[in-house]
Amino acid sequence: MKAAPIVCCAIAVTQCIFCFPASAGQVDRFTCHRQSGGPMPAFTLTIDLGTKNIDVPPNSGLRPDPDTVEITDSTIKWSFMRGFVTFDRKTHELDWDTTAEYEYLAAIGQPAEQSEAIFQGRMRCRPTTGHASR
Image 1: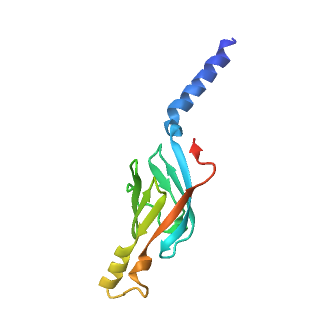
Image 2: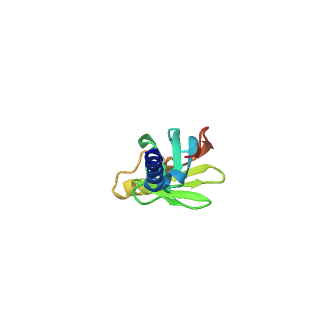
């Protein structure tokens, strides 16, 4: 009878290991602040290397379109509704570009009232405390 609790515990541990394989992935978090270019609010970028996905808050306007996140050893790239982003994993610089929106507005006869330069920018991202493997 004493073997039953041990067997149940072993089964529970095995289920956890096989049901949640992504838990072995590393999650990094960065706080990003505007360095140059157009206006952009500060935000936290979360990179889940286990699932090869990222998370940015909706107010940044940089939420990735489905299936567009590309993670390599040196960069993370994705597109979003109005443009694209490149995050340099070594320098922690994030470049965003929405000049396609500027060009679209000009093409349909509704030119933006601002210069094309504010439709792109660079952010400096710093690792936050607590970024760690999960």
